[in-house]
Image (tube, rainbow, N blue to C red):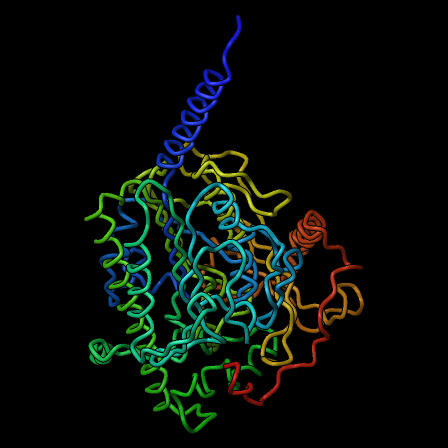
Length: 501
């Protein structure tokens, strides 16, 4: 049968129109993604994770309507490495962001890049914190707003997509929420979007909005019971007490005269905790404002909302403040996920890691997976259960000369045991461990009070845990001979440079 050129052109046009319509419909059917990332957020500071004094109704509502992960952990408890892991699904030695001063490699794929390639409108607004002095746009985002360094609770200078700098002078949490809503209002409802909101809160220096500055004045706060129960613990933990990261130190400038171990000095600690809690109330307000917009525009139930923190925080436990260590308050982070494809009102108790987030979001959105990553999607786990889910994993941290208060760490956490080693460096096997190892039975001792490492009855268990630790390292491409780290120069008393605090 012969066809005229005009008929062929019409046929091709009709097929092209159908293809464009099909792609448009597929895009419209894909869920939006709202990724809300807090900095240094302890799960215990949220109502849905058990806080009796910090009321977070908007965050709690997300948890009630979605999945709350009861055992979510970061693989390195430090801002930049953990943020890179949450984007890429890789451990720090794989994505190379091993400290707070290193850029995420621009050619390294991450889940927002995958969504952008799949036709999503993408934006990152707020604290990026990978590259201390760089506020330029990063690959994978149509719109990118951030700042240099840590940002300020009041008066942050924002770089708007690299085109201009503005300093509105308002409160950080409010400003980043305003920008998020402004961006959402401009989006085409027919095209899926992925919005990342990076809060400064509740990172130090803890400064609440005025309306929340006195919210906890009547709440008495003491050092936790474990703060001075240090018998059998490594000496470095005791040496840390008077430092920038110890309870007798400056407490992120809430204590002016330090070190101070007097009984009355606990008031400084109380004030610090009150400030920390106050910043979280504004984050809850932010979640409520964005949720309200999604409800009014009919987008809530086709939006995957992920709310989480980048790492945990020690708040006096074992005599420490800050994070970095392998102890539970340092490792644990909140994760709440709500939206299409996810069950409602579920609490997931299996051990889930920061590196698991990227493959999970990509599965939920139907986008192209990331290749050769360390993480595993938890979608099957939360929907139906997963008998093959992990029961052990590797945690590590490398000593920082800028913050010389925490040793090199290589640790194994199983469903029951925590086994921690402190290699001297510059390689895992170069010299004997620098410090006493730690072993905790998390079932009997969830607060890690009794170090069992010297218990003769644990000798066989320790040998097996050490074998598992090396096996986990090997699976991630780390061997005793190639696992490089700084040399442990010991706990230091000096304060960190003011620019990087």
